[in-house]
Length: 353
Length: 282
Image (cartoon, rainbow over all chains, first blue to last red; front, side, top):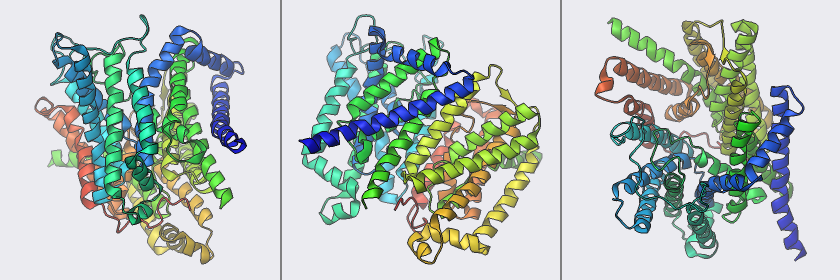
C-alpha cells in the first residue's frame, strides 16, 4: 500500500514538477521579450482564468480536451506497439474531411443518430487508411515511420486544401469550405461549444484503456512495443501488430477530426485551412506526458494529460486576447515539457542500471 | 535554351538550402544522432540572421550570429540526446516545436515585422554550398576525424574501447552540423526578400532529412537528392507560371515533391547503409 502510494506520488509528482519548470522558463521568456517583470504574472493569470475561471472557460477547456483525448490515445496506442505517430495531424485532417462530406451528403431527413455514427465511422476509416501507410512501409520496406508520416502530413495538408477549395467547395459560397453538414453533434450546454463528442472520446478512451491492459490483442501489442525480437521469439506476429496499432492510431485521429467538424459550431463544414489546427501535434505531447516517468504508453494517463493540454490551449487563447501575449509561448512551454519528461524517465533508468 | 538555363538556375537556388541542411544531416546521422532537429536549426538560424541583420544593418553580423545559433541548436540536440538520453525523435520534435513557437512569439512582438535591409547574393550561397559538399566529403573520408566520426555511428562501443570519447565526438559533430544547417536558414533568410515570416522553413528540414536517407547517408548522394527535390520544386513553379495552373491546380502540383519523396523512400529503403548505431540512446 505504502509502495503504491509512493509510485502514485511519483507518477503525479514528476510531471507536475516538469510542468512547473516549463511554465517558469516560459515566464522568464515572456519577461525578457516583453521587458517587464509583471508580464509573466499577467499572462499566466489570464491563462488560468481562460482555462478554469468560469463556465465559458471550463466549456472551452473541455471543448479542446475532446479531440486531444483522441489524438493522445492515437499516439499512445502507436507508442504501445513501439512506434511514434507523428502523423496524427494529417490523419485528423483526412478524417475530418471524409466525415464532413458524409454528414453533408446524408439528407437532413435522414435519422440523425445513424448519420452521425456513419460520419464518424467514415472519418475513422479515412484516418485509418492514412495511418496504414507509414506502418506498412515500415514493416515492408524499413522506411522510418516518422519520416513517412511527416510526408503524409504534407500530402494531407495540400490534398485536403485543394479538395476543399476546388472540387468539393460549397458552390453556394465564396469561401473555400465544403458544404454545410446536415447533422451535428448536439451541444452539452446551450450557449457553449462543448459537445457530445466529449462522451464519444471518453467512451473510446476508456474502452481502449481496458483493451490494451486486459485483452490478448493488448498483451501482444505491448509485447511488440517492449521489443520486437523478444515478442517474435514468443510467437507474436510483430509486423501485423505494428500495422494494426498504426491503423487504429489513424482511426482515432480521424475520429478526432470528425467530432471537431461535426461538433464545434465555427466548423460544421470542412475549411481548406483545417490542417494545422494543432490537436494532432498536441496529441504527441499528451501521450508523452501520459507516459510520464515510466516512458511506457499509458492510456489512463491520457485523461489528465488531455485535460491539461485542453486547459493550456483554452487559456492560451484567452491570454493572447486579454493579456496581449502571443499564444505561441504555450508551444515553447510544451516543447520544454516534452524534453523534461523524456529526460526524466531516461535519467531514472540510467541510475538503476 | 534560355528557358532551360533559367530553369536550372531556379532549381539550383531552390536546392541550396536543402543542400546545406542535407549535408548537416549527413554529419549528424553518420555520427549516430537522428537528424530530426534540422527544421528547428534552419528556422532558428533564419530568424537570428534576419533579426541581427535588421538590428545591425550588416549581413555579415547576421551570418555570424546565424551560424552561431545553428551550432548552438545542434549542441542542444546533442546535449538532450547524449547527456539526458532523450530519445532522438522526441528531442527533435521538442526542438522543432519550441523554435517554431519561440520565433512566432518573437515575430508577433515586432509590429512591423522583421526585415533585413542588407542581403547576400544568391550565387555566393550556391558556391558555398558546393564548397561545403567538397569539405564534408573530404572531412568524412579523408581525415582521421571523419573516420572516428563514422566509427561512432557504426559501433560506438568499439570506438569507446579504442579510446575515443563518443560523447565529445558527437558534440563537436553536432555543432558543426548545426552551423552547416544554419547556412540553410541564412540562405532562406538573407537571399530572398529579407523578411522573416512565420514558419518560413515550411518543412524543408524534413525534406532535407529525406534527402539524407535517399542519398544513402553519403554527402554526394544526399546533395544529389537535394538537387532532385530542388528541380521538382522549380518544375512546379515554372509549370505554374507557364499557365498550367489552369490545367493542374497549384495545390496538386505542390504535392509532387512529397509524393516523389514517399515513393523514393518506399523504393530505396532497406537497412543496408543506415549507420548501424543510429538513434541508440544506449
